[in-house]
Image (cartoon, rainbow, N blue to C red; front, side, top):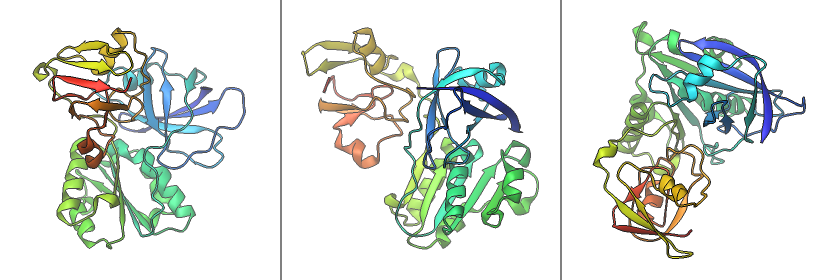
Length: 317
């Protein structure tokens, strides 16, 4: 765990603030690879994950950008309303679930809204390395797009394309056409709202893109109706204990009630921290962490959000 001090807070766009975090002891912060995020421990006890969008090599500070969400579960609302310059927080060391692939070929970076954050760090690294890439940034309007002033004047501005739903019609995107015209060895990196990402992924597959060339990061899982969930049991392989999981209750919550301390972080099926082996039974996967192939194997699942299709799951716990 690293103690940091909030060094600066800036309004980057409508409902988006950036926060610069400096190490409290004045020492250097760990370098990170583009696409990485940190766990931010908030004063209200919540832990939230935010992508790092500043320089990756020997950073003087970490920078995150946070969209204030209307349906906030306490993370973005707390940061926007309560965080102040000089305040001390704790963070985890950077982790990367969304790295740049070492495979050759041009890169297409598609950002939707606040999804610009990890892709900004990627663009800076690719530009530094002289790589072939384009960054396409989609937002409702220029007023709701973070870092547009920087992107207009940065060293790789000629490879940045901003597309807005409102305003100048010439700046609207035809991302499907871009996908169709891309070389066969291109790699696609995608981050943004669920609907935006789903449409891009479906379009790419329809156009023949291989799954191995699609790289994505989700910020939140799609909401589900917990009232439709049924009850089931999980069994601990180590001692045979049976634990009932009620409708509307997560497996993670049921395990914790039973005294099983399972590490977890995002609790939305995004980060993979709570990933647990399944020895018997069929999980109902609701995560955004495992690939389709990994989900089909049914030998592991994310108990923070996924459930069971069978009456019982036997877990390697």
